[in-house]
Length: 374
Image 1 (cartoon, rainbow, N blue to C red):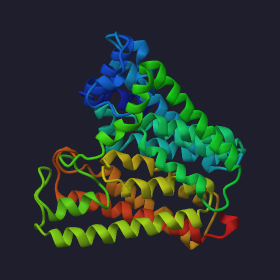
Image 2 (image 1 turned 135 degrees about the vertical axis):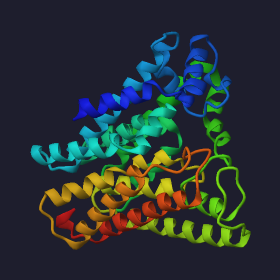
Image 3 (image 1 turned 90 degrees about the vertical axis):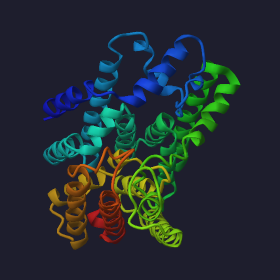
């Protein structure tokens, strides 16, 4: 299954333009190779780690193949680690079934397709998150924090997922924070080596340069009202109404903040807590691209694992059915237009609406199920 889906994903991406890779990541690696800071490249908003990963092929004609293969392997590895984390130690059959489901739901989906075509880093971050969850469940607290920190170092804004360490009942917080600090120190060291103190400052400030992208669709509590109730270059609005835009934005943001608070206060299992928090964060981001939903996909893997484990709690079944329907609506139905520069408000409403409902049910289920079921 991994070989078949992985090859299909790789083969489809090789023929794509991969603009983020071609226009930002590869030029940043070439700048490093030439002795310059990666932040001399317009549009490079991440830590130097991504550029460092590409250094071996910065001057190679096989750079696209390398980058695509690396992300394909990362996606497969994330499914394997996720499958292992969703099952008790030694429950190999259940872990295997969940892994197969994970491979299908991730690699046979439009968000993964568009992410690979864009040349983005979501699969690397997802691997780090699944590694953090597995390490936490196996009692390796430092490795859990380190993996969580690496995910943030790769793409910066996933540092918000670090709020997982603030959840009620979390254990080994000191070791986890040490792991996060080790990842941050490594990123600072790489930046300093790449361009001195200025590169360190650029690493901190660069993400803010990409924090406003009004010309792109945003699948979030901020982006949906803007698309539905204001004039944009992305889609034709339902109607132009600043008042309705403000009211809807406030209502959706408050909804997501309530879910975020519940996920911290009544988190449930460490695994589902991490990805419930990721789910809500993605829906709260002002700039939230369509393919960011892959960060929330492991909630479906978790609830399916609970069903396979024989749990008959109504909340477990509700969460499983809801997240499965969410996957069908969001991952299998292609977005209108290209999903980035062009779309329609009904398409955005389907993506955000289905995601908001799935996040709500998953967070509430994690908070309500009996401890023995977690």
